[in-house]
Amino acid sequence: MNPDDSTARRDREWLDADGNPIDEDHRGLVYDIRTLVDRRRALGIFGGVALTSLLAACGATDDTDASATPSSTGSSSPSAAPSASATTEAEASVPLDEVPDETAGPYPADGSNGIDVLDDSGIVRADIRSSFGSSTTVADGVPLTIALTVRDAATGAALAGRGVYLWHCDRGGDYSLYSRGVENENYLRGVQETDANGTVTFTSIYPACYSGRWPHIHFEVYDDIATAVASGPIVKTSQIALPPETNDAVYATSGYEQSVRNASQVSLQSDNVFRDDGAVHQLATMSGSVTAGYTAALTIGV
Image (cartoon, rainbow, N blue to C red):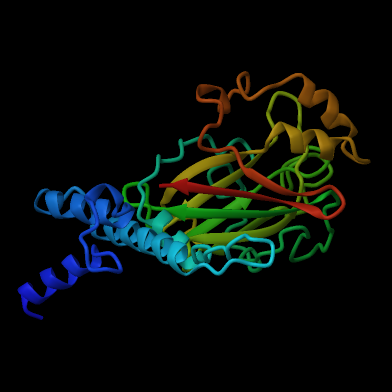
């Protein structure tokens, strides 16, 4: 297209129905944004993705205002909501803080403290409620789905194909393979590979609050599944903190009685792991209910 043709087309956009020029003060948001971009393009203030999103949003708003059809009640039809894929791409382009490194604790079963469950057949699984191998015991408790999303802290990009090992205590506050009475169980432990969105999802039960610790879930991130099951180098070791409101609701149910007292004696600020920053980057987002089960979601930067 000839540059002069483009300029002429844009000039015609700002004429009224009688062909008279529209004053700049009344040309609207799209005109303002285009003018701003023209003035700052050489400075590179807007990135390609951000600029495209900004103009698209303005265009959508302007088109909606111009084409909205009044309903019988006098209101206009709402514009379409942003697509999920666009939202995901936007989130993935934003850097995020790296999740703090935390202790794996005394019961990791990753080979660092005697027991190694990572090389056992059956450890790679999504449902970690039952033991595998010689035992099929199922851990009781309020259902909990754990969705952990792993992203590159520097870029926000989803890290697909990473290995994630996750474990936590049972309803009584005991850790399989270590605690008295469950030494021969290996439930509430599992390994999975992150999907294209960097997410792994485990089916589990809500952990107890045992004496001296805030309710939490342990995890380790590896470069891939092969490295995880070989107990290879760990990229990140950290913990997920569970929010007080959900803890209160769960611990009021049968089987969690001892958690009520334990939870009353600890806080995020006094917990020996989360007290450094109050679990700012480790506190899960919760949805669900006691009867339907909960989902704990957390995005971490590594």
